[in-house]
Image (cartoon, rainbow, N blue to C red; front, side, top):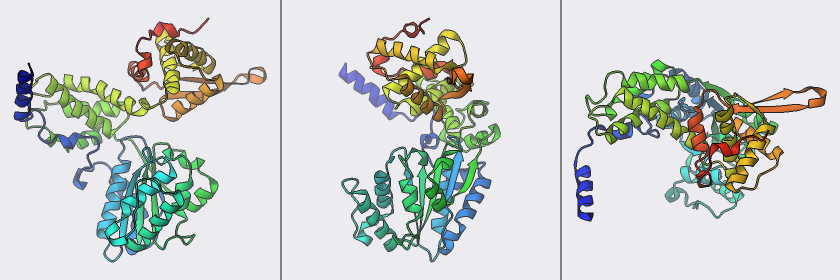
Length: 415
Protein backbone atom coordinates (compact mmCIF):
# COMPACT_ATOMS: atom_id res chain seq x y z
CA UNK A 1 0.00 0.00 0.00
CA UNK A 2 2.81 2.41 0.90
CA UNK A 3 4.54 1.69 -2.43
CA UNK A 4 1.33 2.35 -4.35
CA UNK A 5 0.83 5.65 -2.51
CA UNK A 6 4.37 6.65 -3.33
CA UNK A 7 3.79 5.79 -7.00
CA UNK A 8 0.63 7.94 -7.08
CA UNK A 9 2.47 10.91 -5.59
CA UNK A 10 5.37 10.47 -8.00
CA UNK A 11 2.94 10.28 -10.91
CA UNK A 12 1.27 13.55 -9.88
CA UNK A 13 4.53 15.37 -9.18
CA UNK A 14 6.09 14.09 -12.39
CA UNK A 15 3.43 15.53 -14.69
CA UNK A 16 3.14 19.16 -15.77
CA UNK A 17 0.22 21.05 -14.26
CA UNK A 18 -2.64 20.63 -16.77
CA UNK A 19 -4.34 23.92 -15.83
CA UNK A 20 -1.80 26.44 -14.57
CA UNK A 21 1.28 27.76 -16.36
CA UNK A 22 2.34 30.45 -13.82
CA UNK A 23 0.04 29.94 -10.85
CA UNK A 24 1.76 32.66 -8.83
CA UNK A 25 0.10 35.27 -11.05
CA UNK A 26 -3.26 34.45 -9.46
CA UNK A 27 -1.98 34.35 -5.88
CA UNK A 28 -3.85 37.04 -3.96
CA UNK A 29 -0.57 38.36 -2.47
CA UNK A 30 1.17 38.60 -5.86
CA UNK A 31 2.40 42.14 -6.57
CA UNK A 32 2.00 42.78 -10.31
CA UNK A 33 4.42 44.66 -12.53
CA UNK A 34 3.50 48.32 -13.10
CA UNK A 35 2.07 47.59 -16.54
CA UNK A 36 -0.37 45.15 -14.90
CA UNK A 37 -1.80 47.77 -12.49
CA UNK A 38 -5.23 48.51 -13.90
CA UNK A 39 -7.72 51.30 -13.32
CA UNK A 40 -5.73 53.25 -10.75
CA UNK A 41 -3.95 55.93 -12.81
CA UNK A 42 -5.82 58.75 -11.04
CA UNK A 43 -4.97 57.36 -7.61
CA UNK A 44 -1.30 56.84 -8.58
CA UNK A 45 -1.16 60.40 -9.85
CA UNK A 46 -2.78 61.82 -6.69
CA UNK A 47 -0.48 59.94 -4.29
CA UNK A 48 2.59 60.81 -6.37
CA UNK A 49 1.70 64.50 -6.11
CA UNK A 50 1.55 64.22 -2.31
CA UNK A 51 4.97 62.53 -2.16
CA UNK A 52 6.61 64.61 -4.93
CA UNK A 53 8.72 66.74 -2.58
CA UNK A 54 10.46 63.62 -1.25
CA UNK A 55 12.36 63.29 -4.53
CA UNK A 56 14.03 66.65 -3.86
CA UNK A 57 14.75 65.87 -0.22
CA UNK A 58 11.72 67.77 1.09
CA UNK A 59 9.08 66.59 3.52
CA UNK A 60 6.44 64.36 1.91
CA UNK A 61 2.83 64.91 2.91
CA UNK A 62 1.27 62.47 5.35
CA UNK A 63 -1.54 60.64 3.56
CA UNK A 64 -4.54 58.58 4.69
CA UNK A 65 -5.86 56.22 2.02
CA UNK A 66 -9.42 54.89 2.40
CA UNK A 67 -11.25 52.24 0.45
CA UNK A 68 -12.85 48.83 0.76
CA UNK A 69 -10.82 45.63 0.68
CA UNK A 70 -9.38 44.79 -2.73
CA UNK A 71 -9.47 48.29 -4.21
CA UNK A 72 -5.70 48.55 -4.77
CA UNK A 73 -4.77 50.74 -1.79
CA UNK A 74 -1.72 48.76 -0.67
CA UNK A 75 -0.66 48.03 -4.24
CA UNK A 76 -0.65 51.71 -5.22
CA UNK A 77 1.09 52.81 -2.01
CA UNK A 78 3.88 50.26 -2.53
CA UNK A 79 4.21 51.09 -6.21
CA UNK A 80 4.42 54.87 -5.79
CA UNK A 81 6.86 54.59 -2.89
CA UNK A 82 9.10 52.23 -4.85
CA UNK A 83 9.11 54.57 -7.87
CA UNK A 84 9.97 57.53 -5.61
CA UNK A 85 12.84 55.56 -4.10
CA UNK A 86 14.20 54.51 -7.50
CA UNK A 87 13.95 57.97 -9.11
CA UNK A 88 15.63 59.96 -6.35
CA UNK A 89 19.11 60.83 -7.59
CA UNK A 90 20.92 62.72 -4.82
CA UNK A 91 18.36 61.93 -2.10
CA UNK A 92 18.42 58.75 -0.06
CA UNK A 93 14.84 57.48 0.30
CA UNK A 94 13.92 54.45 2.38
CA UNK A 95 10.53 52.72 2.40
CA UNK A 96 8.99 50.38 4.95
CA UNK A 97 5.67 48.54 4.67
CA UNK A 98 4.02 47.40 7.90
CA UNK A 99 0.80 45.37 8.24
CA UNK A 100 -0.75 46.63 11.47
CA UNK A 101 -3.07 43.63 11.71
CA UNK A 102 0.11 41.66 12.49
CA UNK A 103 2.05 44.38 14.32
CA UNK A 104 -0.85 45.89 16.26
CA UNK A 105 1.08 47.41 19.15
CA UNK A 106 3.34 50.44 18.94
CA UNK A 107 6.37 48.46 20.13
CA UNK A 108 5.86 45.69 17.56
CA UNK A 109 5.39 48.21 14.77
CA UNK A 110 8.41 50.40 15.53
CA UNK A 111 10.56 47.28 15.93
CA UNK A 112 9.42 46.05 12.50
CA UNK A 113 9.97 49.47 10.87
CA UNK A 114 13.50 49.65 12.28
CA UNK A 115 14.34 46.15 11.01
CA UNK A 116 12.93 46.93 7.55
CA UNK A 117 15.02 50.09 7.19
CA UNK A 118 18.19 48.85 8.81
CA UNK A 119 21.39 47.72 7.18
CA UNK A 120 23.41 46.52 10.13
CA UNK A 121 26.65 46.30 8.13
CA UNK A 122 26.44 50.06 7.54
CA UNK A 123 24.88 51.27 10.78
CA UNK A 124 26.31 48.84 13.31
CA UNK A 125 22.87 48.98 14.96
CA UNK A 126 21.27 45.72 16.06
CA UNK A 127 17.47 45.49 16.05
CA UNK A 128 16.27 42.23 17.63
CA UNK A 129 12.70 41.19 16.87
CA UNK A 130 11.75 41.44 20.53
CA UNK A 131 13.23 42.02 23.96
CA UNK A 132 13.80 45.79 23.94
CA UNK A 133 11.64 48.56 25.36
CA UNK A 134 9.61 50.80 23.09
CA UNK A 135 11.87 53.79 23.77
CA UNK A 136 15.00 51.81 22.88
CA UNK A 137 13.43 50.65 19.59
CA UNK A 138 12.64 54.30 18.76
CA UNK A 139 16.19 55.37 19.62
CA UNK A 140 17.61 52.71 17.29
CA UNK A 141 15.14 53.59 14.54
CA UNK A 142 16.13 57.26 14.65
CA UNK A 143 19.81 56.30 14.60
CA UNK A 144 19.18 54.19 11.48
CA UNK A 145 17.27 56.99 9.79
CA UNK A 146 20.01 59.54 10.44
CA UNK A 147 22.71 57.19 9.22
CA UNK A 148 21.04 55.89 6.04
CA UNK A 149 18.28 58.19 4.81
CA UNK A 150 17.25 61.71 3.97
CA UNK A 151 13.58 60.74 3.60
CA UNK A 152 11.62 57.75 4.91
CA UNK A 153 8.22 56.68 3.56
CA UNK A 154 6.41 54.45 6.04
CA UNK A 155 3.30 52.59 4.88
CA UNK A 156 0.99 51.51 7.71
CA UNK A 157 -1.51 49.09 6.20
CA UNK A 158 -4.70 48.53 8.21
CA UNK A 159 -3.58 51.41 10.44
CA UNK A 160 -6.90 51.29 12.29
CA UNK A 161 -5.74 47.98 13.84
CA UNK A 162 -3.11 49.78 15.94
CA UNK A 163 -4.02 49.62 19.62
CA UNK A 164 -3.66 53.39 20.01
CA UNK A 165 -2.42 56.54 18.26
CA UNK A 166 1.10 56.48 19.74
CA UNK A 167 2.86 55.31 16.57
CA UNK A 168 1.28 58.01 14.41
CA UNK A 169 2.11 60.69 16.98
CA UNK A 170 5.74 59.64 17.31
CA UNK A 171 6.41 59.28 13.57
CA UNK A 172 4.65 62.49 12.55
CA UNK A 173 6.53 64.55 15.17
CA UNK A 174 9.92 62.80 14.95
CA UNK A 175 11.71 65.61 13.10
CA UNK A 176 9.85 68.44 14.83
CA UNK A 177 10.92 67.11 18.24
CA UNK A 178 14.56 66.76 17.16
CA UNK A 179 14.62 62.95 17.32
CA UNK A 180 15.92 62.68 13.75
CA UNK A 181 16.98 64.87 10.84
CA UNK A 182 15.32 62.47 8.42
CA UNK A 183 12.04 63.67 6.89
CA UNK A 184 9.39 61.04 7.64
CA UNK A 185 6.20 60.64 5.60
CA UNK A 186 3.40 58.35 6.76
CA UNK A 187 0.98 56.62 4.40
CA UNK A 188 -1.81 55.19 6.58
CA UNK A 189 -4.23 52.77 4.91
CA UNK A 190 -7.65 51.88 6.30
CA UNK A 191 -10.88 50.23 5.18
CA UNK A 192 -12.78 52.54 7.55
CA UNK A 193 -13.78 55.82 5.90
CA UNK A 194 -14.20 57.69 9.19
CA UNK A 195 -11.20 56.22 10.99
CA UNK A 196 -9.07 59.40 10.96
CA UNK A 197 -11.93 61.42 12.43
CA UNK A 198 -11.56 59.47 15.66
CA UNK A 199 -7.85 60.11 16.08
CA UNK A 200 -6.65 62.12 19.04
CA UNK A 201 -6.79 65.87 18.30
CA UNK A 202 -3.05 66.22 18.96
CA UNK A 203 -2.34 63.43 16.46
CA UNK A 204 -4.58 65.00 13.82
CA UNK A 205 -2.88 68.35 14.35
CA UNK A 206 0.58 66.81 14.04
CA UNK A 207 -0.25 64.46 11.17
CA UNK A 208 -2.37 66.89 9.10
CA UNK A 209 -3.01 64.13 6.55
CA UNK A 210 -4.15 64.49 2.97
CA UNK A 211 -6.94 62.02 2.27
CA UNK A 212 -7.37 59.79 -0.78
CA UNK A 213 -10.46 57.64 -1.33
CA UNK A 214 -10.21 54.51 -3.49
CA UNK A 215 -13.53 53.49 -5.03
CA UNK A 216 -14.47 49.91 -5.82
CA UNK A 217 -13.55 48.54 -9.23
CA UNK A 218 -16.32 48.18 -11.81
CA UNK A 219 -16.86 45.06 -13.92
CA UNK A 220 -14.81 46.38 -16.87
CA UNK A 221 -11.83 47.21 -14.63
CA UNK A 222 -12.03 43.82 -12.94
CA UNK A 223 -12.17 42.10 -16.33
CA UNK A 224 -9.05 44.00 -17.41
CA UNK A 225 -7.28 43.01 -14.18
CA UNK A 226 -8.10 39.35 -14.81
CA UNK A 227 -7.07 39.56 -18.47
CA UNK A 228 -3.65 40.66 -17.19
CA UNK A 229 -3.54 37.40 -15.19
CA UNK A 230 -4.66 35.16 -18.07
CA UNK A 231 -1.13 33.90 -18.60
CA UNK A 232 -1.33 32.22 -15.20
CA UNK A 233 -3.16 29.49 -17.14
CA UNK A 234 -2.09 27.22 -19.95
CA UNK A 235 -3.19 28.30 -23.39
CA UNK A 236 -6.73 27.28 -24.28
CA UNK A 237 -7.84 25.97 -20.86
CA UNK A 238 -10.06 28.97 -20.06
CA UNK A 239 -13.40 28.64 -21.81
CA UNK A 240 -15.00 31.75 -23.30
CA UNK A 241 -16.85 33.71 -20.64
CA UNK A 242 -14.83 32.51 -17.62
CA UNK A 243 -12.98 35.80 -17.11
CA UNK A 244 -16.09 37.88 -17.82
CA UNK A 245 -18.17 35.88 -15.33
CA UNK A 246 -15.46 36.02 -12.63
CA UNK A 247 -15.29 39.80 -13.01
CA UNK A 248 -19.06 40.22 -13.06
CA UNK A 249 -19.60 38.16 -9.90
CA UNK A 250 -16.93 40.11 -8.00
CA UNK A 251 -18.36 43.42 -9.23
CA UNK A 252 -21.84 42.45 -8.04
CA UNK A 253 -20.55 41.67 -4.57
CA UNK A 254 -17.90 44.20 -3.58
CA UNK A 255 -15.91 45.41 -6.60
CA UNK A 256 -13.01 43.61 -4.94
CA UNK A 257 -10.03 42.74 -7.15
CA UNK A 258 -8.77 40.21 -4.62
CA UNK A 259 -12.10 38.42 -4.73
CA UNK A 260 -12.12 38.42 -8.53
CA UNK A 261 -8.60 36.93 -8.63
CA UNK A 262 -9.52 34.44 -5.91
CA UNK A 263 -12.60 33.31 -7.86
CA UNK A 264 -10.53 32.76 -11.02
CA UNK A 265 -7.80 30.92 -9.14
CA UNK A 266 -10.28 28.70 -7.27
CA UNK A 267 -12.09 27.95 -10.54
CA UNK A 268 -8.79 26.60 -11.89
CA UNK A 269 -8.22 24.60 -8.72
CA UNK A 270 -11.73 23.17 -8.93
CA UNK A 271 -11.14 22.14 -12.55
CA UNK A 272 -7.91 20.45 -11.44
CA UNK A 273 -9.69 18.51 -8.68
CA UNK A 274 -12.33 17.31 -11.14
CA UNK A 275 -9.71 16.26 -13.74
CA UNK A 276 -11.24 18.68 -16.22
CA UNK A 277 -9.21 19.76 -19.21
CA UNK A 278 -10.83 23.19 -19.24
CA UNK A 279 -12.04 25.78 -16.74
CA UNK A 280 -15.76 26.43 -17.27
CA UNK A 281 -18.38 28.87 -16.02
CA UNK A 282 -19.67 26.09 -13.76
CA UNK A 283 -16.26 25.99 -12.09
CA UNK A 284 -16.42 29.78 -11.66
CA UNK A 285 -19.78 29.62 -9.89
CA UNK A 286 -18.52 26.91 -7.57
CA UNK A 287 -15.35 28.89 -6.92
CA UNK A 288 -17.30 32.03 -6.04
CA UNK A 289 -18.77 30.32 -3.00
CA UNK A 290 -15.33 29.11 -1.92
CA UNK A 291 -13.92 32.62 -2.35
CA UNK A 292 -16.70 34.05 -0.22
CA UNK A 293 -16.01 31.46 2.46
CA UNK A 294 -12.29 32.34 2.37
CA UNK A 295 -13.11 36.05 2.67
CA UNK A 296 -15.30 35.55 5.73
CA UNK A 297 -12.87 33.11 7.26
CA UNK A 298 -10.17 35.79 7.05
CA UNK A 299 -12.58 38.37 8.45
CA UNK A 300 -14.16 36.48 11.34
CA UNK A 301 -12.20 33.24 11.68
CA UNK A 302 -9.94 34.75 14.33
CA UNK A 303 -12.71 36.20 16.50
CA UNK A 304 -13.00 35.15 20.14
CA UNK A 305 -15.53 32.46 21.04
CA UNK A 306 -17.73 35.12 22.64
CA UNK A 307 -17.92 37.18 19.44
CA UNK A 308 -18.43 34.07 17.32
CA UNK A 309 -21.27 33.02 19.61
CA UNK A 310 -22.85 36.46 19.29
CA UNK A 311 -22.61 36.29 15.51
CA UNK A 312 -23.92 32.70 15.48
CA UNK A 313 -26.90 33.86 17.54
CA UNK A 314 -27.71 36.55 14.97
CA UNK A 315 -27.35 34.23 11.96
CA UNK A 316 -29.46 31.56 13.69
CA UNK A 317 -32.20 34.11 14.35
CA UNK A 318 -32.14 35.01 10.63
CA UNK A 319 -32.45 31.34 9.67
CA UNK A 320 -35.29 30.68 12.13
CA UNK A 321 -37.39 33.80 11.61
CA UNK A 322 -36.54 35.14 8.16
CA UNK A 323 -36.54 38.65 9.64
CA UNK A 324 -33.98 41.31 8.69
CA UNK A 325 -32.96 42.61 12.13
CA UNK A 326 -33.38 41.99 15.82
CA UNK A 327 -33.24 44.07 19.03
CA UNK A 328 -30.17 43.29 21.10
CA UNK A 329 -32.39 41.91 23.86
CA UNK A 330 -33.57 39.18 21.49
CA UNK A 331 -30.00 38.58 20.31
CA UNK A 332 -28.91 38.27 23.93
CA UNK A 333 -31.52 35.60 24.64
CA UNK A 334 -30.38 33.54 21.66
CA UNK A 335 -26.75 34.13 22.68
CA UNK A 336 -27.26 32.89 26.25
CA UNK A 337 -29.12 29.81 24.98
CA UNK A 338 -26.23 29.03 22.66
CA UNK A 339 -23.67 29.60 25.43
CA UNK A 340 -25.52 27.07 27.56
CA UNK A 341 -25.46 24.49 24.76
CA UNK A 342 -21.70 24.81 24.10
CA UNK A 343 -20.67 25.21 27.73
CA UNK A 344 -19.41 28.80 27.57
CA UNK A 345 -19.97 31.28 30.41
CA UNK A 346 -22.21 34.06 29.02
CA UNK A 347 -21.22 37.70 29.36
CA UNK A 348 -23.58 40.48 30.36
CA UNK A 349 -26.08 41.96 27.93
CA UNK A 350 -24.09 45.19 27.93
CA UNK A 351 -20.97 43.30 26.88
CA UNK A 352 -22.86 41.54 24.09
CA UNK A 353 -23.97 44.95 22.80
CA UNK A 354 -20.26 45.78 22.60
CA UNK A 355 -19.70 42.59 20.58
CA UNK A 356 -22.50 43.65 18.21
CA UNK A 357 -20.89 47.08 17.74
CA UNK A 358 -17.54 45.43 17.01
CA UNK A 359 -19.11 43.14 14.41
CA UNK A 360 -20.76 46.17 12.84
CA UNK A 361 -17.36 47.91 12.77
CA UNK A 362 -16.02 44.92 10.82
CA UNK A 363 -18.95 45.34 8.36
CA UNK A 364 -20.28 41.88 9.21
CA UNK A 365 -23.46 43.21 10.83
CA UNK A 366 -25.65 46.24 10.28
CA UNK A 367 -26.55 48.03 13.51
CA UNK A 368 -28.76 51.02 14.17
CA UNK A 369 -30.19 52.84 17.17
CA UNK A 370 -33.88 53.59 17.57
CA UNK A 371 -35.29 56.03 20.11
CA UNK A 372 -38.28 54.40 21.80
CA UNK A 373 -39.38 57.62 23.44
CA UNK A 374 -38.97 58.94 26.96
CA UNK A 375 -40.23 55.72 28.54
CA UNK A 376 -38.51 53.25 26.24
CA UNK A 377 -35.06 54.80 25.86
CA UNK A 378 -32.66 53.74 23.08
CA UNK A 379 -32.85 50.28 21.50
CA UNK A 380 -30.10 48.87 19.27
CA UNK A 381 -31.19 46.70 16.35
CA UNK A 382 -28.76 44.49 14.46
CA UNK A 383 -28.79 42.04 11.60
CA UNK A 384 -26.59 40.53 8.92
CA UNK A 385 -25.71 42.89 6.07
CA UNK A 386 -27.96 42.13 3.08
CA UNK A 387 -25.01 41.62 0.72
CA UNK A 388 -23.65 38.74 2.81
CA UNK A 389 -24.52 35.08 2.22
CA UNK A 390 -26.32 33.94 5.37
CA UNK A 391 -25.32 30.27 5.04
CA UNK A 392 -21.65 31.12 4.57
CA UNK A 393 -21.46 33.57 7.48
CA UNK A 394 -23.33 31.12 9.71
CA UNK A 395 -20.98 28.29 8.74
CA UNK A 396 -17.84 30.34 9.41
CA UNK A 397 -19.23 31.73 12.68
CA UNK A 398 -19.67 28.17 13.93
CA UNK A 399 -16.24 26.85 12.96
CA UNK A 400 -15.07 26.50 16.58
CA UNK A 401 -14.97 22.86 17.73
CA UNK A 402 -17.41 23.69 20.52
CA UNK A 403 -20.15 24.18 17.91
CA UNK A 404 -19.60 20.74 16.37
CA UNK A 405 -22.73 19.11 17.82
CA UNK A 406 -24.98 22.17 17.94
CA UNK A 407 -28.39 22.02 16.30
CA UNK A 408 -29.67 25.44 15.19
CA UNK A 409 -33.02 24.75 16.79
CA UNK A 410 -31.37 24.69 20.22
CA UNK A 411 -30.83 28.47 20.07
CA UNK A 412 -34.51 29.31 19.64
CA UNK A 413 -35.48 32.54 21.38
CA UNK A 414 -37.56 31.98 24.48
CA UNK A 415 -41.14 33.18 24.13
